[in-house]
Image (cartoon, rainbow, N blue to C red; front, side, top):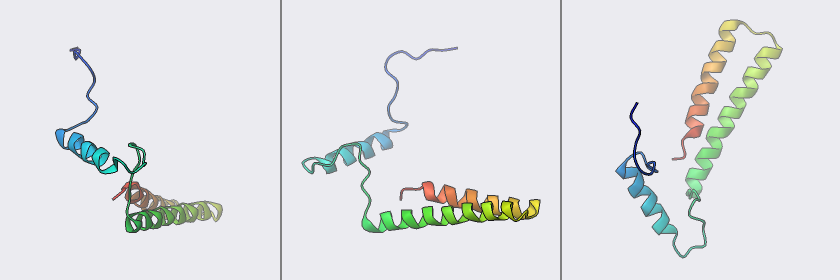
Length: 92
């Protein structure tokens, strides 16, 4: 097993390093912390909508369990919940 010499990489690719640099520079002098995620009002609204859809899907799963729905119905609802949760993870 090979061991890497030196410090661990902080960024997976040069493009990620460049985006981080651009982000840090865009926040200089604003008082916004460097580790902040800045979203436009539309991006924030879209993110909230995606999380709302995921929560509704989770509630559907809970109701289906309480109502003792079929395995097939639960599997379908779970698949939908997973898809919505993946969408909700996207920041942009």
